[in-house]
Length: 99
Image (cartoon, one colour):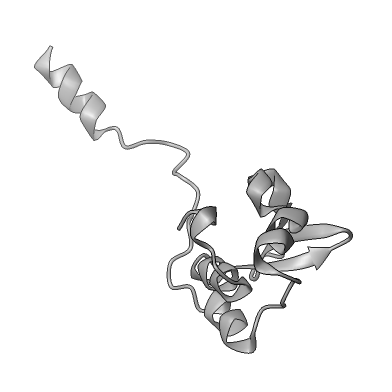
């Protein structure tokens, strides 16, 4: 979903919950917070359109995440994991045999 398609704070929270993230006020702005790890990123660092000022201009006063959306963020079935440090050697061995 593009930022232009967001019509309400509920839309913002629904999109965030699909990725296991909530958006919440922090200081004078907004942050995205991973609900499991607690890692926070300023919303305006992700995209300028996601700054508190711009979102409040479009959507009205900030509305906190609902209990349903909070629970949905905790139940994300797939979590991204780091790539393997070492790649499989099978393609390299196949290449060596072809020489």
